[in-house]
Length: 437
Image (tube, rainbow, N blue to C red):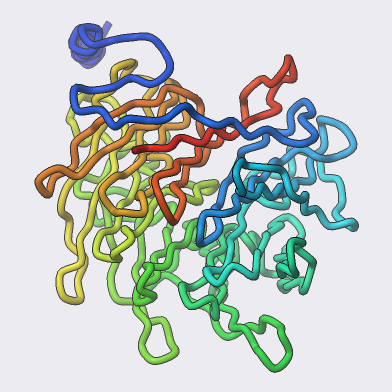
């Protein structure tokens, strides 16, 4: 055994000793000042077939009265996938409402979808509540549905050119519902393969159609950087954030970057690049600041648009020698965004080699709570509460999760667990709703 191996073994032993003192069983682990959570509500697919993976992605509508939930396996057999999106509506209880899946959607072999390219791998409600855009990157089509009374009807198909690889890798409406940003994370830019772009579409009221306006891209494009894998508008509509999965810092290649654009009149202009405060070279060579190819919730603006939380699930900001992950908080000062604080997990169940804290991030509607997911290894969702202007960890909900999101109103937190076994059906999946009081 080398000296390096001895050092890592010592670090691992010390970390296990430290956290074994506060270890407890599964479920919800709480700290002294823990957030109270009411009994959770479970949503299941109306079909519940093997390998459906219901709960792969989640989105609430703007008033929290509906939630859209995607699943990736709805083909003719478990070895094929199509994808679909189910809508659940809230009256006195949450009830299944409708399944959205185009009739002409082809079956696709699972191996083809290496970038989560199924129908419903990315989708977004418009803030005005009348439009739902659902991407299918493998066919380079975004399906636009419009709500008519209580039913969602297909209004338009936005079809990309043959060169727009990864069209629909991410998708987001602007706060005024007039612009639709569509990530194209594998598009070739100026002959640079897989550099990635974001296409912007504007709504034309005269034709009731969405039309292409222009594209935005990273200020320095590089081969296989996958710009446009995740997108977020600030709630006040002044800032657009886009990740560049394999963006380089001055010291670390492929660490990950987040690009910021500001709206000048009608044009989005590149203004700043955010990077990790301590860029990491992980065992895979990727830091994942701002997420990876399949991340849709790896960074998010606060409700007041003054804070941007960015996950980096391969970071080692605690200098433990292990890539346990973190979330970095940037605050807006005048026209610049500056680093403010870092969140790390102080888990009550801990294996330092299996932590990927920061795979998903969401703010509660009041801006005083942040939920942070860790999807791989020991999976959990950690809740942080703002106390005296600093963020303190409160709870750890121990369960597998791929996507988490707070409702835009109230305290409801939705956690997607697509690997859950439901009534002996493997990987049927479920969504758990927690009321964080």
